[in-house]
Image (cartoon, rainbow, N blue to C red; front, top):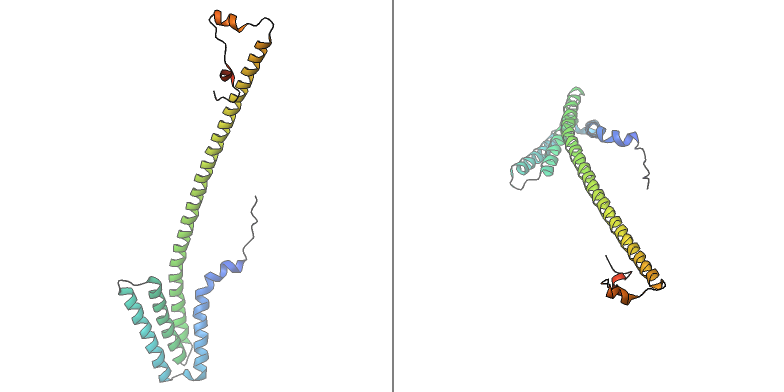
Length: 204
């Protein structure tokens, strides 16, 4: 059966690659909107973002140093800390140079981490595809061997049946010959074959 294949849209491949830049750009835009709505030089807002960023960083450090730490939770905590710190500075600053500099740094770091995960995911995907292909090849080999064995058994049974049928027909023709005397065969030392000896259903 031919499998129907569909071409992937280019956006499907491009969107994961653009996700880090989209995320950092979204944070920058929201921070500047917050800046325009009263966050500029607001000490209370700066303290709030600083406390939240510090708390997220502490949680990430605790998760990273713990015996039962989870890598995903640690990464999320540090990402949240960086995002909160970036948003706080971008919202508090009165100009664009510093927020743009932080946006550039955050984007580069985001892509650095993303590339690492992309490589790991690609490596795992290739390994999974390789194992799947090997299992399919092994299964196909087993199926081929079983088909050959079944055909050999069928051909052997057909050959045995044909031999038994030919033997039975020969015995029948011999018995129908004029002057055939089984007693004469016994006296000559050639015993007559019984019905069991030329049974068509018998396996030879």
